Structures are given as C-alpha cells and as structure tokens.
Image (tube, rainbow, N blue to C red):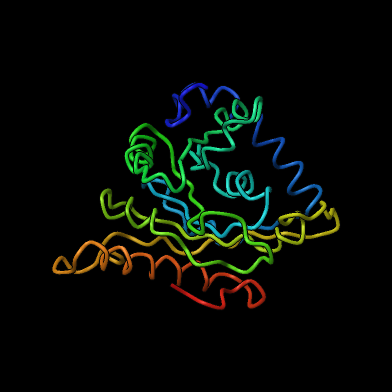
Length: 226
C-alpha cells in the first residue's frame, strides 16, 4: 500500500479544489438545505486546527463546505486499506493515523500539513457517534496542541446523524446545519507549566470538549464531559 501518512502538495490540490467545492455545494445546499452560522468567527490569516463532533459519513466534506480553504483530514488507517477509497480520501486531503498501536506519527504529520499550506480538521471523539450525542474526546488533539500550539476552531455539525447516521440510510428530507464557534488561541488553552504531561493533556482535552459541547443543541450534547 502507498504511504498515506502525509498530505500531498497543496498546490496540486488546488487544481480541482473549486470543482470539489461546487459539487459539495450542490449536495449540501441543494439537497440538505445546509445553513452555516458563525463564519465571521474565522480568522483566515491564521493557521489553525478545526475540531468538530462526528456522527455521519457526511461530516468530512461538510467541514470543507463550511470552511472554504484546503483542509487536511486525519482519518483512521483501516479506511486506506480499501481500494479506490484510499485514493479518493488521499486526494481529498486525508492522511492516515493508526489507532491502538502507540503510533504518534500523527503529531508530526499534522504539523507537516499545517506548515505546508493546509488547515487540519480532526474529529476528537475518534469515531462516529451512534445516536448523534457527542462522545468523550480522545487525547490525540491535546498532544498535537501541546507540541505545536496553534489556534483551534470548534464547529458543531448539527443533524447529520439524522441525515445519514451510523448504520442508517440516507434521509434526504433532513435539514442540516454547521455552527462555527469562536477561535481559541494557545494562551486560552495552554496549561500551567508546573503540571505533569498527563495533567496538561487532560486540561487541554477539557477545554475543547466543553467548547464543542457548548455549540451543540441539547439533543446532541454529551451526557458526560471530559
């Protein structure tokens, strides 16, 4: 299998970027009546990481629809084992991360993407929610932010679980929404230097967990926060 751990040149991506955006616009705006709230919160002069809840196959391209910039997506390694899908994902800006193998290459690979013209989008829950409610977040994002402090942008994907949730059929009558929060800067999430590493990670996790949860409607809020 080809190496999909890193994103390719953003200059090549731009060759079909607008074609992809038009196609996504037709689907999300034309079929699902998608609305976007809070785009004025985005500072495009910054390099930042996008953090979102996750409960549908629709979510990665929906993030790209809401944030009009080339975006690199962290995706689980197993998806890249599927022929054709691996190429499609790679050319959509995804890069692989191995779960449960003590593989921390995703930290350097995310930094590489940010340094080479991409924004990075991560779903910190680590998988799709079955019922649309936000699940506890993982520590991977905290590790990235601790080693490479950049702003993060929390966004809520609303009702995508009803439009095409896990183990569900597509419901074309569902209206979906993207709610974009305010950017969070390193000085707002970096912990006290006197803390040990695990305490620092828990502190950062707690911040982005609450920032995401606060954007969600009551029916999608987490019952248990980190």
